[in-house]
Structures are given as structure tokens and as C-alpha cells.
Amino acid sequence: MLRQSRLAVYTAVFAFIAALPLWGGEGALAQSGKAEKDIVVATVEGQTIYRTELLRAFQRLPDQVKQAGLETIYPRLVERLVQRRLLVIEGRAQKLAKDPAVIRRVKLLEDAVIGEVFLNRLIESKLSPALLKERYDAFVASNPPREEARARHVLLDKEVDATNLIAHLKGGMDFAEAAKKYSTGPSASKGGDLGYFGRTDMVKPFSDAAFSLKKGEFTQTPVKTKFGYHVIKLEDLRKVEAPSFEVLKPRLVQEAGQGLAAQAMAELVDKAKVERFAFDGSPMKAPPAR
Image (cartoon, rainbow, N blue to C red):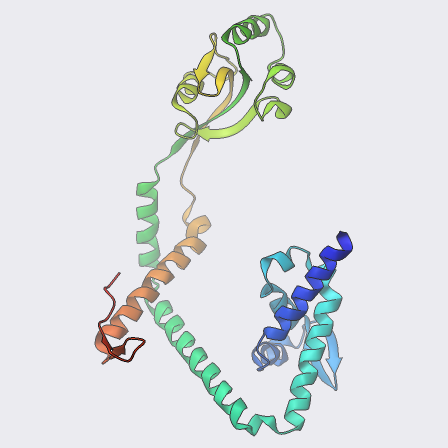
């Protein structure tokens, strides 16, 4: 099975790298002045392939392939980049840079890059600190401090068993050991530890009982829910504040950028003269604004 799994990973690497465009985007970046101190992973006919290029190729692999880890697929990845570079070298030797098919595809790539750079610069010009602060304040307002409890519980099928357990706990029985021994819930192996949860994360009778306790206390009567009868012990209470601006900044930038991109595209379409046609060639109305 392990050999088959590795074979699947290698096959996916070959297929994905082979599908990547052979234009000099990554290679050109690797060959730039910024890459002079980069680590060399291969040389092909006097041309250098740097680690930067390999890492970028790795990041563009499907998630299921990346899960195997860079160390596992590194030799195959290097070999595939070598093969790609040889294809480019041989193609240039045959003067394919002037081939009409190449020129057409390069033009398409050029158009895509121009559009992407234009949009990115437009977003950057509007992505001000004030806008990010405004979005952060809105996030904090809609996410007030949240109280969380950390509790253990023992889940039992019968109320009488839960009542008897409470009596044993009052007599000094260790709660975590009792949960491991008697609980029918999935947290039994962890001593009944449920981790931290908010009031709405659990069914209401359970939450009400847990949040009514003081640290170290356990319920004096069984708590009935649709799952059975619980004996609950409160381990800790905490108040969770909203993340700081710096912690949340990457998310704010991404969300604000997406909003600005959508706004920019809508404005460009509104200003442009656009005619739309259906699949059969008949006139078609513009889709409704989102």
C-alpha cells in the first residue's frame, strides 16, 4: 500500500508539473538578481535552476500531493524541472520563439498578466490603513468577548447510575478516572475532557449546568439531555477577546481586497460599452448585479 501511495504521488507530480506553462515566469524570477544568493538545485546545459523555482513549483502542486512532503517528492520534482528546462532549451534552439502558435499563446499570457497586474495595483491604491481599521472595528463590534468553559463529564444511560456516581465523587473518587471507567461518551478516553466551549456550543441543559458551576465544582444532581445523564465538572472559565488587529490583518487584507476587486470590476463594466449574446447568437441582457 505504501509503495502504491508513493507511486500515486509521483504520478500526480509528473502530471501536474507537465501541465504547468513552460513560459519563463518562475525561471525568470529565479534567474533575476534577487536569486543570486539562492541555492542551486540543478544546472541544465549551463542554465541554473534555483531552489526558489522548485519551492514555487511545490506550492502549486495539489494539496493531496503536497501532503507527502517536500522531502518525499524532492528528487522527482527536481527531475521534472530539469525536463521542463530541456524542453525550453530545445524549443528555443529550433527557433520556436518566432513560431505563430507560440506568439499567439504568449499574447494570451501577456493579456492575462496585464489584467492581473492592473487589478492588483488598483486594489493596492485603495487598500488604505483607514479601510482596514474600519473593517477591524466592524469585526470587533460583531464579535464581542465570548465566555468559554472547560469541563469534563461522565455520560451514563441511567439516572440512578449518575446519582450513584455523584455519591462516589463526593467521597473522593477522581473525576477523570471515573470518566475513563464509566462514561459512555466519546471523551471517556480523555477523562471526559471536552476542552473549551461557548454557551451555544452544547445543548442548553448541559451548558446551563456547566456555566452555573464554579471552578472545581461538579453537578450535585444528574443533568438530563437527549444523549443521556451527565455528571459535569467545571475545570476553567475564560473570556475570549477578539484577535488583535495585527493577528487579523492578513484576513482583513484578503477580504477587503476581494471586495475592492468586485467593486472595481463592476465599475469597469458599468463604464464600458458591452454587448452580450446568448449561445445561439441572439442578444442577451446583462446579469443582475450581485
